[in-house]
Image (cartoon, rainbow, N blue to C red; front, side):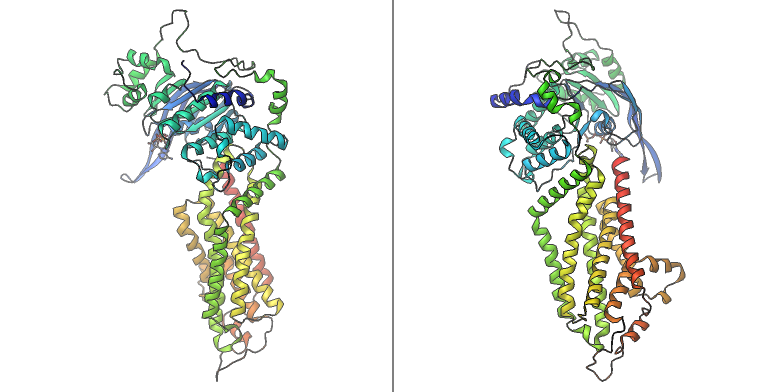
Length: 630
Ligand SMILES: Nc1ncnc2c1ncn2[C@@H]1O[C@H](COP(=O)(O)OP(=O)(O)OP(=O)(O)O)[C@@H](O)[C@H]1O
């Protein structure tokens, strides 16, 4: 195989740096009789129908090779990759063996330390490349010293030609650079098996060629690289070792790239001269030649390439004995990783441990802090929105808290305050979490961290934000509306507003983590609206019996009752009346008529706090389930 022409500086950089990027062990992935079928609801027939996506495919991906899974759109490439990586195994059956150790295809777990770079993987846009790499290294390489981690980050960035962009924010990178950073992040833990879904999608031909060259080099180091590629150019196709072509869920061709044309010819499929073999294969797989694909696949399977003059086959697979050290003699002249004692000490198997739980929490917290500080305008806007609403409410309900003739106005202010903090707490996370979920799925699958530290780090940033927003609203609006400033009342009012808002936020996390954005966007307000009806619009005595349980579990109602009680309860003396007659001059009369004379402050606060904790527990459980049972 002719080595691809490469920029000399990149070659020399790679020669110098690739040593530390050799994998710890080699992985051979064999799979037998993989099928995948799912139930799809047919709108026309109004019933579920079984859809067979993968129809009993076999194969073997070997170390030292870059395998391209090809096929027309809808052939089942991503589905197969998901199953093989163990990322999503819904409806999958069959056997997958990693270095001879068999597992069931339906088990969703990273196989053989596999890392998976998905098509939709996104980077943390507010971090620079160097920060993203350093933080990932801190998470993944728990036993490395900070010097060793730094060295490794520099080596990988140099290998991928990213050293000049190390200080660039990920959001400012080009598409090709983003894909390379995604690869760089996963190379930190030196995976032996790497899956990539459509790594070249959205890249121009030069960026695609450079990325595939890189993947080819990484495979040469003894890794098993598997990538789905839609329609590679002729130049790009040259860099692929093995082609695994799917057509309608069946394997059309599985073998060395060099033998593809001869195999196609054996099935009477002749690639026109000057035609890209990859394009020709796609045309065949798409059914453009009107032939029986199953028959053609079977003929190609039985095809035996002609031995060359020296008796070898055209394609010499770089299979090595799996239990023997890698003896790499590729173009890059890498050292034997297991023979290099310094390297082994530094990057040996036992040293690749992720950091501990506490360390993970600390690193993730720092990462969130960095991202938030870069995106502080969002935080400022959130606080500003609360301040503006406080000013508007303060203007509309000015002085209502100290006047008996405007008790009902104050009642509406209290309800509006509750509504505001519940909605802002809930919607800010309901809408942002589904986006976060996508990145979380990738990082969690690739074993960057565990769920506990992640949740703690998210809450540790989000909770104070919401609290600060609430406090700025309450301080300003409470003062402008001239509600009683006695410390007990004011503190209780603030506490109940903050607690109810955090409860709404906990609901937001639950809805955001369990439903897609399109559903979350209306489910969040619907739930908030439903709970807000109780207590304000509907007293318990007026609530029909079948709905009374909603009154009792409504955190909104509980928070609202405490808020009203903090203002008008605790034996508040008569309120000043500037009219001839004020109906609610006595606060206790007002509470009695609103069905709030006997509010259990402790019980209601306990309800709000319990629901907050419960919703966070449910969120953690739902997240764990979604991340582990795909
Ligand atoms: N969860 C699902 N529900 C319904 N159909 C699905 C599901 N997942 C995959 N499919 C169907 O299975 C087929 C194969 O999908 P897959 O994404 O694996 O194709 P692909 O070869 O990767 O296509 P592309 O190159 O366009 O990404 C498609 O027809 C797709 O609609």
